[in-house]
Amino acid sequence: MLSTPEILRRTGGRPVKSIVFDEAAIAAKVQELGARITEAYPDGELLVLGLLKGSFIFLSDLVRVIQRPIQIDFLVASSYGDAKVSSGTVRLLYDPETQLEGKHILLVEDIIDTGKTLQRLMTLLGTRRPRSLAVCTLLDKQLATEVRPELRFVGFRAPPAFLVGYGLDHAENYRHLPFIADLE
Ligand code: IMP
Ligand code: MG
Image 1 (tube, rainbow, N blue to C red):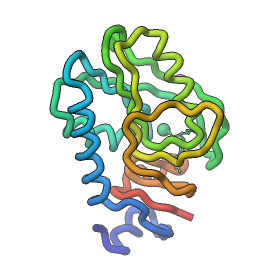
Image 2 (image 1 turned 120 degrees about the vertical axis):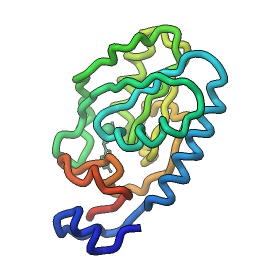
Image 3 (image 1 turned 90 degrees about the vertical axis):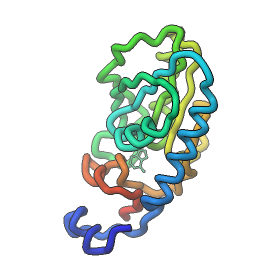
Image 4 (image 1 turned 45 degrees about the horizontal axis):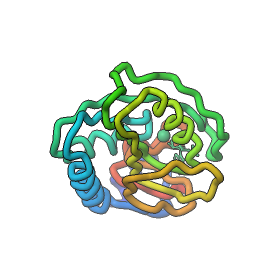
């Protein structure tokens, strides 16, 4: 656990309102998700697809506790810009180069808000004939929208606050915080 001065050094003096999930809680949850994923895929090729940029820290911890062979690639989609409110528009900026056909695909996301980003990606990836397609998200805000993708592996239910840290950003800041905090 970081002390207050250690936190403020990392945020440039901006206080965090509260730490929602600390390092220990996150580490325990990642272990649990890794065990569940290992068990869920007894055979076949598994491609772990990280949605950049938010999932990069979660994905790097998660893949190290999955106890079976995997491949790793990334997707880049953009929906937020600097705004704190979801715009609903998604842009695909990088398409995975790895072959998807016949493989189990596990999409790894940092946080699901409206789920629009993910819904669009699921439809697109489904056309590439994977053996299966599932989602693992660290956080789920559980917003009720008409089209919500099915979330097979969920770490935590997130409060309806704007969260930063452990990969989550506000205008590219705070991704490096080792915990998840409410900034407001
Ligand atoms: P959705 O398409 O509305 O589900 O938006 C999901 C994406 O928005 C996530 O992958 C995050 O990058 C971003 N996002 C949603 N909520 C938060 C938050 O509380 N903090 C930081 N980023 C967020
Ligand atoms: Mg994201």
